[in-house]
Amino acid sequence: MNLQVNPTPKRFAAVVLAADRTDKDPITQYTGAACKAFAPVGSVPMIIRVVDALSACEQISSIILCGPPEPLLEQCPELKRYITSGRVIWTPNLDSPSRSAEKGVALVPDDVPVLLTTADHALLTTEIVQSFLQHALLIPGDAMVAAVEQQTITAAFPASKRTVIRLRDGGYCGCNLFVFKPAGRSLIGFWRQAEDLRKQPWRLIAKVLGFTTVWRYLLGTLTLQQALVAVSHKSGVSIQAIILSDPRAGIDVDKVEDLMLAESIVKARL
Image 1 (cartoon, rainbow, N blue to C red):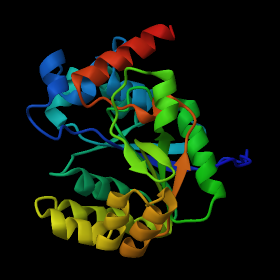
Image 2 (tube, rainbow, N blue to C red):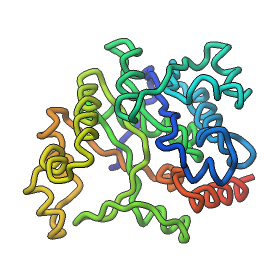
Image 3 (tube, rainbow, N blue to C red):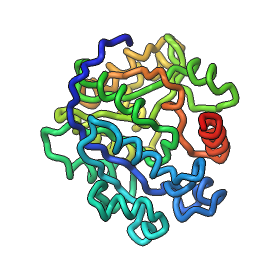
Image 4 (cartoon, rainbow, N blue to C red):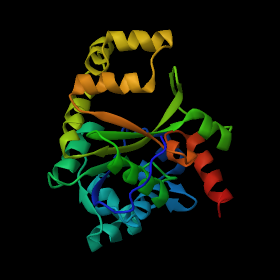
């Protein structure tokens, strides 16, 4: 999507999900960090890399951090300073990503658009954030999701193994970057309802996509736009995708292999 970027900044609140999903997270086990968000990449905790990138972005007016649990904050002095200074607002996480997101977004005034991301986005840069937010302001829709084309990541990092959504018009990797304009916030509630159905796959499919859309996907005829239209119809929220050009946007750190890749990318850019 080639768009002319509007240079006028619009203030967003950033919500960052920073709680471990499991007490046996492979990154914490491998690094010995107090929690996944504190695992270092290039000697800098992942959460600090994310907060630094957001803090330097002129479109971000505030940062809300959901998790990690308060007793762990002492294990990351840099984060503690951010919170003590008021530059980051900390709130306890809840028992799932969607519920934590819902809680964080509820702290933002209703008329303020929200950027949602995660603490394991270790390669996030201010430039990636700015590009996403600037494009989000220019296109119609109430919610935006960032993605990177698989071929963009493969060309830059051939050894990377990413989760790919394979559609008729190409393969796409998610970026853990979402924008919710005021009318798009109800999508988080839809996400929570879907999350509650994760142990009932057929009901989950029916809730999120509908069986016709899934059938098209299985046949290899589903396009990205058709998938977005289907989810928009089911959720009642107009959703658009923004394709980012920076391959780092599509790399988060879920596995030890991801951590090693992130380390190599950081070192190569020093």
